[in-house]
Image 1 (tube, rainbow, N blue to C red):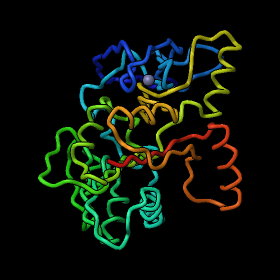
Image 2 (image 1 turned 180 degrees about the horizontal axis):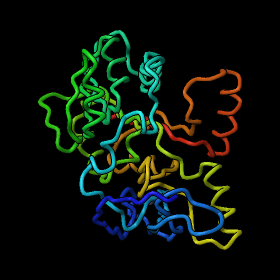
Image 3 (image 1 turned 135 degrees about the vertical axis):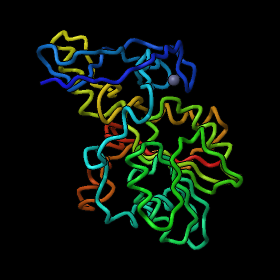
Length: 295
Ligand SMILES: [Zn+2]
């Protein structure tokens, strides 16, 4: 059965790439649900565009929900999120390594889109001063249960701070933002000179599985693609390529200190992970991208 999406949307039409101002090409239609190879599978469709210069992929016009909660105020266990409470200490260490920041001094850290608050808690336990932002009501309640990190129910653009940050992290968040350039601009303003912005685990537009499915749909003369999920969970609005993230850094005069295509797994069997990682780094076909910018 197809679930009816009851959310009201307004639509924003873009005439060029919001990152590099490149031209847009029509990439295909994306439905409000699982895309099937045969038969009509959704009750609503939007057009997906692709920047011909930097490869950014997004719905155009973009459906913007009436409120953030109409997409994200749901039982936290129903959402696709890393919900395990263990392993976050390693994740926090790994992020500081990627960002080449010292671990022995207390850092001022902003965690944009805290989700369940596990990463903010891990940074706090390592002695850093952390603020987490979480606009969704249900996730804000979940994140606020932790003692230690400050969690605010706010978007980045609404939040106000009197100090600046050493590290700003978007972990599995940037692809959900309706105005990522506006949010990124705010993050750059809040970052101290020499600070780092990490955008981690954003979907890769060149992911092998997506390309295979798109190829199969094209072979069947179907007008659809499976990039992004603007009308159904997990509500991904953007897919990136290495070139999109390089262009983002260039636009804001930031240095790219790390840029990789990865599996979405941070830790696994180290031998298998390294072999697979090498393959997808060479072919750029992994599921996610990770970038660290320095101001
Ligand atoms: Zn572009």
